[in-house]
Length: 303
Image (cartoon, rainbow, N blue to C red; front, side, top):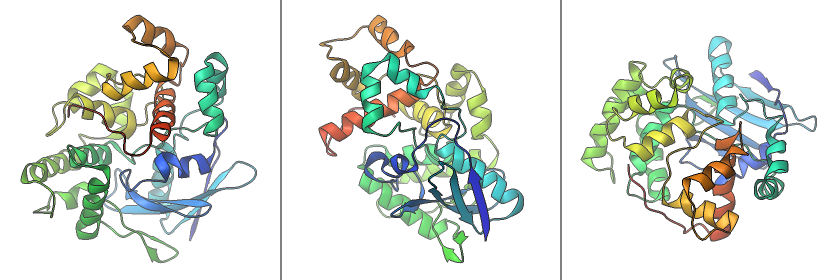
C-alpha cells in the first residue's frame, strides 16, 4: 500500500469536489464517493496500465490518499489525480475573484470555493463527450460502465478492484456495445488510435495556444466546436479561459447578472474580473445555476 500527499495552494474543499454536480459522477470517469473520501480510477497517461487512488482531506487541509500503485506509476497517477481536482493550480487568488464580483462571491460561499472537477485526461474527455452526444447523462454513464467492465483495467486499492475506463490500446479493440450506435463505435476506435499515438496528450494540448489546440481537436473523429472546447477546458484542466458560447452559457450569464440580453462587451466586462480563474468561474456559475434549476435542465449544443 502506497501513500499520497497533495498540498493545496490556496483554499480547497474535497467535500465540495465530492459533491460536484450532485455527486462525483460516473460521467467524469471511473471511481466512486464515500462518506469522507473519493476514489479515482483511470488510465495513467504514458503508461500501459491504470491506477486507482482513494483520497480524503485532513483537518490541516492536506489531501492524503492510498493506492496499490508504486514508483513512477504512482507519481504520475497522483499528478493526474491532482489535475483532475484542479489542485495543480495555485488557487490563492481565487477568493479575490469573489471579492471583485459579488455574484461569484456568493456562489463561492454557497459551494465552499469549489474548484472544477475535470476529466482524468483529454482522452477520457474526448471519449466521454462522443459517447454522450445526443443521449442523456445517465445513458452515457451506463455505457461508460459497460465499456469499463468489458475492456477496462481493474486497478486495486488494498487489493480491492475498481473499474477504469479502457485505455486507448484496449478501446481500439471495441466491437459493439448495446445502446451505442455504430457511428460512435467507429469514432471511439478512431479516438483510441489517436490516444495510443500520443495525439491526445493532455499536457501538450494545454501548453499550446488556445486556437492551435482547438484546431487540432477539431480534426478528431466526432469532435465539433462544443466537444473541442469541452476537451480543452474540462479535459485538460485549463484554469483561465472562456469556452465558445452555447445556449446554456448565455442563459446562465443573463440569469446570474439580471440581464435581459448581453453583448460581447457585457461578457468581456464581467469575465475580465474573473482573471486568472475565468474557467473556474464559468464552472461555478454553471453548478449554481443547474442546482437552482433542477437536474432536468437541458440545453442545445453542437458536437
